[in-house]
Structures are given as C-alpha cells and as structure tokens.
Image (cartoon, rainbow, N blue to C red; front, side, top):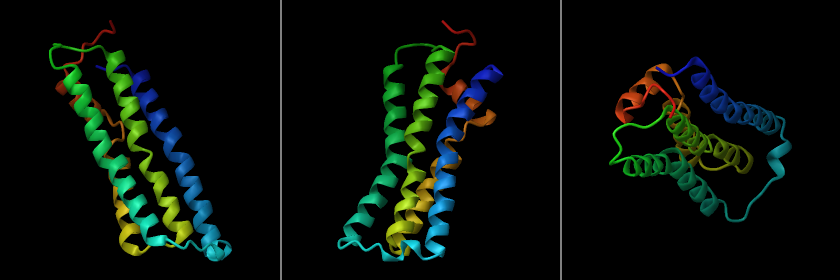
Length: 152
C-alpha cells in the first residue's frame, strides 16, 4: 500500500498545476465579461484555434498514452518496480496531462469558435478527471504495474 505521504505528494503536484489554471481562468473570464479583452484581434484565428485544439488533444490524451506505453515497454522484462519509480512516473504523467487545462485560456482571449472551445474544454476536463490521483486509481495502477511495497 502506498504511504499517505506519497498520495499526498501526488495530490500536491496535481493541485499545484490546477489551481493556477483556475485562478487564471477566473481572471480572464472576468476581463472578458468587463470588455477588456474585446479589442484583441488576431488575423489568422482559424489556424490558431485548430493548433490549440490539436495541442489540447495531444497533451490531454495522446502524449499521456504514449508516455505510459514507454513506461510499460521499459518495464516489460521486470517483474516488479519500486514505489519510488512508480511515483516518479505518476508525477510526470500528471504534469504532462495537466498542461491541457492551460489551453482553455486561449479561446477566452481570442474568441475561438464554439467547436474548438468546446473541444479544448472536453480535453481539459478529461485530463483533470482521469489523471486525478485518487486512491482507487493509484491502487488499480499499483496492481497493473506490480508495485513492490518497499522502496528499493
């Protein structure tokens, strides 16, 4: 079983990344409501919105799957791994996936179409929900990766 400190450490990592995004979203949304961001115009909005939509999908879904696959292939011939190595993997996975909510700020500033804005929000919600270090998720992954209870 993972010590409470390690779960707490993963949650601290998660919230250190998520809380600034929430604060920034509130600030930029209020600026938008009060009309401060109305004067921002970008000439090539469609390519920029497509780029951020794709980046949100890459960081929210594709890159975490790729990183997890690399981790699994690295450990293919190893029977068990240490908790320390598992925690390092989980922290990196959280950091990679939690880049996605930062992409929500761009549609607020630059008035992306609802399709791209909604897609970026869905990618961000998926990343925030799926990669939250809950006890059930961590225990499930511990079983998958055959984690040793003692750090080597």
